[in-house]
Picture 1 (tube, helix red, strand yellow):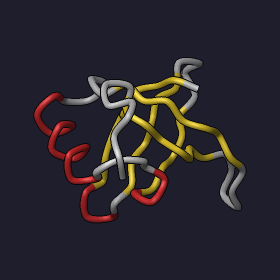
Picture 2 (cartoon, one colour; picture 1 turned 135 degrees about the vertical axis):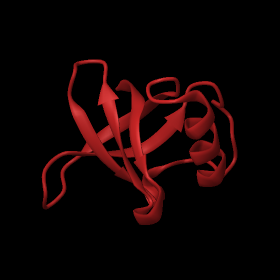
Picture 3 (cartoon, one colour; picture 1 turned 90 degrees about the horizontal axis):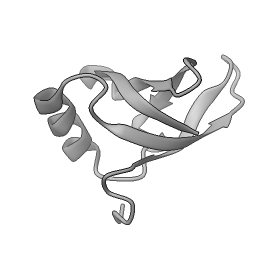
Picture 4 (spheres, one colour; picture 1 turned 120 degrees about the vertical axis):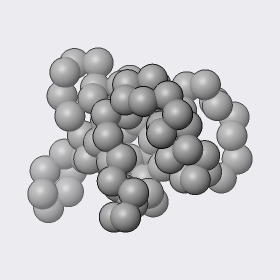
Length: 79
């Protein structure tokens, strides 16, 4: 699925993605395939919804969440 980063909560190391289908999905730092500090910095400079991502939707005890989150502008970034 595709979407954009909607929000990042720095002190708790999680965020939310607004999906192309208008759904909203929680993701944790561990769900992000890339360098978390780069994501946080770029989000702070670019603002909401300027970072496009792809992700999988998985079930969790609290409902659907995003996993395997990858930035579209860094498709081959190593973790």
